[in-house]
Length: 415
Image 1 (cartoon, rainbow, N blue to C red):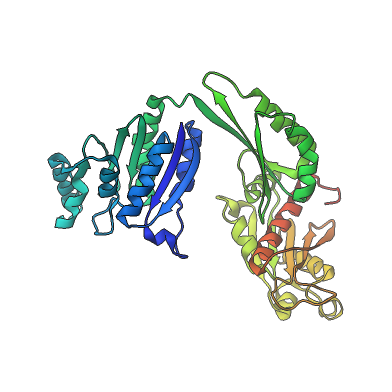
Image 2 (cartoon, rainbow, N blue to C red):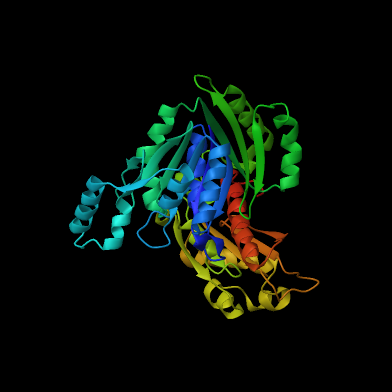
């Protein structure tokens, strides 16, 4: 089915709020076999909502509307949908009593304006809202399907899963979208595409996208598969791309880099400590997102100043004076020092110039040094990373984890 999403709410037309519901709905609709071809954000003005709904009903098989079902004056989706469909609205007495009981169970008396949430469009099937007071509605019009959903994500998602997904199956999407994702690190986007384009262009039925971010590159493969058929060509292409890219592919199962690092460290019995200068805790934060990371992550040092590098990580004064805080020598000394300070198997460090100031011709903004020490060897890696201050910091942490993974995969070899 050809699906369309309409998000209602003037707050999403300001610079302070974004429509996150559409991301969730898009993913679930594609998984259910519905192709999302258009998304619209519209404010609370009733005429504009009516116009958006009428246009959607002319071009889409399945329209999902989020927001505007609350009890306040600016919640106008019900009225606009009724106008667009040319139907009446009535108070459903059973729904009204259920709302009163819901408020009473929570220790509140229902206000008069909440009665609006018992209004039902003629011919609609009411969708229960277990986490809120705004029920949804399922409507059919000229062979089109129209679903009204509440705006709060928890309410929308629970209602969609319990009440909408089963109905999509009944409506008979006919096809399902199959997706495979490969997450890649340590290779530029242009080189990656040059290597895999000769492969994916041989599979015209598979849609291939290459998405570069600050932490990694995602290669996503999509194909619509008719009911009862397999996706052998999709799996074949994924396997060929993985073979071509080798160990630059760090996950095909949706794992983050820190989860991969945790699995490798936990499986080998080794432990890690980190020393961070320009990232100031970002590396440690990412590492500790993984549940159970305390089994292999011993701790970190935020050594932003030169005295902290010297006093907390035993970086020699001579190294700082001769080579500077942002240098391969300091990165190596930090990695060695933090490993000894925590008694860990491995020490990992980051020092760099995140900007926007502080750079020079010799050491430009974006210059980052990552240090590694495991007791047998101490090495460093240098890069000049693009972007603003925050993206340089994010890329620095990602670079450090990516480089650490290479050492964990191939102990005893160059990283």
